[in-house]
Image (tube, rainbow, N blue to C red; front, side, top):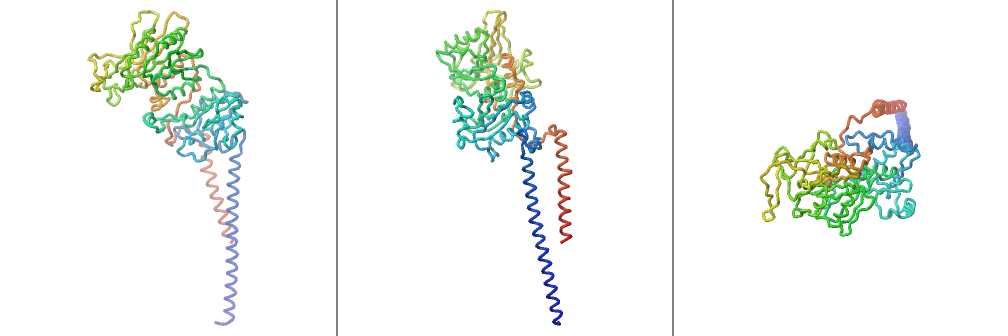
Length: 510
């Protein structure tokens, strides 16, 4: 090969290497520039979507909850109430903590996104903030300058309006399986976050209308869920201890003995009789179970005899297979009587469990009017526990029994209202937790209370079953479809086309 050809090849190689280096440099510059531009666009979008106007960001408007259970969306009941408040209403929700970021498998998974939706739909009436008292201790005195609410020992949220406060503990925003709960395990059965928050907002802006007192100290169970239901009806609740010096506060609108396992005292008979004689309202609920099978409630029956009612010391046994639940004669279906049909949800069945019969007490006064509420089939009997064998000995007679009765007076300007249930399937935490606030039994109880007190439950928010993430097509409205269609059919394809054109032109000219 000649020397000229060798030099020519070296020259061509040098030129090709130079061109390659230039092309590689351009590609590198293009890649870096593209990444920087992409990063700027992402940051710009985040900034734009995060900008708040009237405490609501663009991202809030473009967030959709199409799950069947609507876990992260407030209901129309809440929205309508918030919009009915004056425009200058300021409800401040303060989480006394750093804002939770790792939400999965915690109560905050259902709380934090829902609070964001409260802000989005409230049109400026609600703000949500997270302030950790450990870092900013002044928040305690700012919210509660008089130290009335003991916020220093509060874990969770504070809802504040015009100097008044309601505290919400995240763990109280759910119902739990009572069987697991008795062993210290929290097994959620439903989400009542919105119910708790909206009830608090209603009670802060309107005030509690009534006051209920639970009789405690008689071996009763908890009543947290029943208290939640009362609060949603603007009924504040408090405990009152059973004792020989028992008195009923003057602000008592409703007296409740729920799931008691031991008898009342003589002084309680006198105090409750006096309370009812002035038009008082009372609900009594007991059952026949291993905690009280030897309790005949003699003194309680002495009290109830004044209203021609009596609680039997026996167990209702359902012998009609069509009324038995899972072939269990002690866990049964029951019928609501015609007088109380309007109190129950149409087309649903009611449940009873380990019930005592409720009968008339043969009190011979015609002004006392009693009515059955809940009845068994006509094939029921009653049984008694044989303690020596641990078996139930049934009577041979088959008839219909009442497991719930009502009594009032006629011809008096202030008649009492007395409701007595021989089962706890209408009032107990165990039942409400297992079946939820939408259950037919719970609805009947709520309607009884609403009727007794003329309580307003128009802002009642039903509990939500925990999310199954299925899509509810009824929640896909026209606005949702328009935005999603525009994004999926126009924005995303155009972005890909634009990126393709830019890359093609660049590579073609390199």
